[in-house]
Image (cartoon, rainbow, N blue to C red; front, side, top):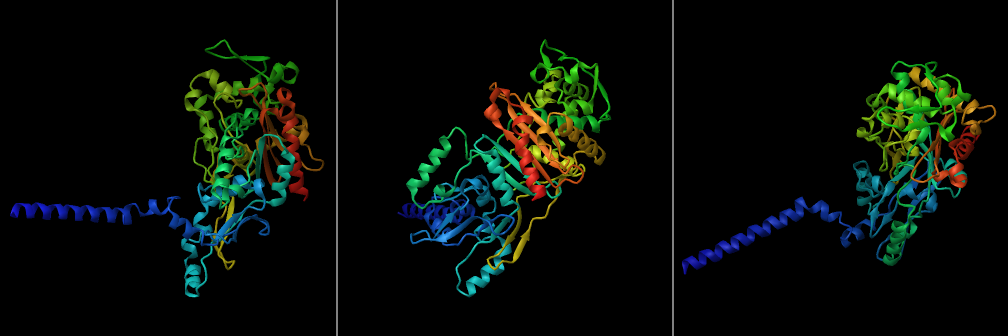
Length: 486
């Protein structure tokens, strides 16, 4: 009898211990995960009882997102008055699919949970006022954002405009984009239908081509190759042989110029500066072979390729597979932005910004400050450098070389009367026979105020006949001129 009682007591003790462990696990170790689970209805009711803060453009008048009261069980509905124009930046705030974009990265502020908002929250609680989130002020210029969208039109691609001295992202648009409003609906069927349509869209509108996808940058990458050359003892006047095509070691393949042309009419030698001006593949292939894969990769990484570049949104930094730079032929093709080189307009804008800013690359900035519900600034995000990939001397030399591209080279379509533009074209081969058209530039060249990077996929309306100078440069010119002349 005693043995049975002892066994029963041990069983109850074991059950008590298990219950204690389970309670502690739920309340301590798993509490955060359970609280943040979108399926937690109590959490959703709590979240939607808070008036989420606004997201504003830099003019502080243009509202990109706000919350309005409703009569249903979820007290506030998220509204996106500019729709797809800012959709890939604001992201969405969804009952079913959670948060994305700035709605995710700035959630602690928007939801009123950040430590900086504690004083305001205490005052609200004492006075019996409902809890409110903070306002996020972005660096986006609504005029340039609208112009970038208009200039890109219906073309698949993207545009990024930046201030090279602060890293401020002034405009960032991509096609296709999406309207976050259906995803923010309080009707489950509407939300699920919108999500399904977006995820099955072949254009992948939930991923921005401006900063989340990678594409071969083509000849715009020659800015990186030229930087490596200048940083490793070469000069704009350094001469290179100018054959009609470049024979590559370890293979029978040859590297050719765009359209099979012979640079500068077939002169025997050509300078590095002239090679950039006319975008001579053969010479830049030679430069790549002379530098070697290690130096080319090292220079690309200084600009942010394959590195973590801090940004307010998930950013796919430029990439080069190191193993692809072990064989000389691959190095030659990588030097002209092909092979395994990938980039997006934000990455290429950062490269141009470093050149425009005397060699210092500023980290891209999308959010400038946070304001509490009373309008007081509680957090500032000051500009800060990402690094210095090139010297001031190299930046000056590259600027002069990029000026010649626009004055008398492949980028003449970007010329603006009375304003000197520095730029670089790119016509990138891909899996289709329709090249991607690129243009990267800044102006005024002597005192840069804005950097613009444009990508048009598959040549836009010109298809296989497209070049970066024909398709992308005129788009960039429109934005440059508007930014400088107002």
